[in-house]
Image (cartoon, rainbow, N blue to C red; front, side, top):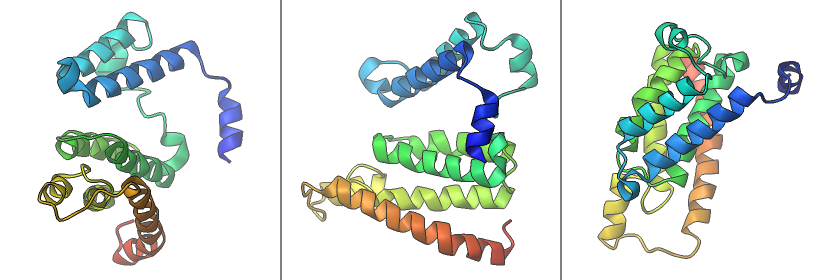
Length: 187
């Protein structure tokens, strides 16, 4: 189904490449904000400015918020899966000190805009926030405290172990959790 939809959409347009580049630049700017001295808000405003100047967006887009949800064609279950995996991977790949505070509300807004049931979206992000704490020695405030206090050694394979635990948690939450949340009436 996804391949058919992608074929119908056609090749990536110039505006889509600009959007990808701008999103990547903003993400890097936020990830390395302390090193380069750019605040997250400034990075976001620069990104919006680039999109406006290059004609990817216009003021009508900003005022009416149209065409901003590109993952809606997946339906809310597909959007839910993509957003949850993205939220999780951001914390695996980057050291995000204020990540939960910065990303939770943004990802919750994307979930709700994609049609994910309200309670399911809020709880899944909260559960996911707890799950990524076991990924690496820096993936959460608690993990850093345990590592800093010497309770956790840093073997050469810590990132592999974190990845394996991520897969185990994804299977448990994705398989068992799906049925449990349905039983509880969350969707």
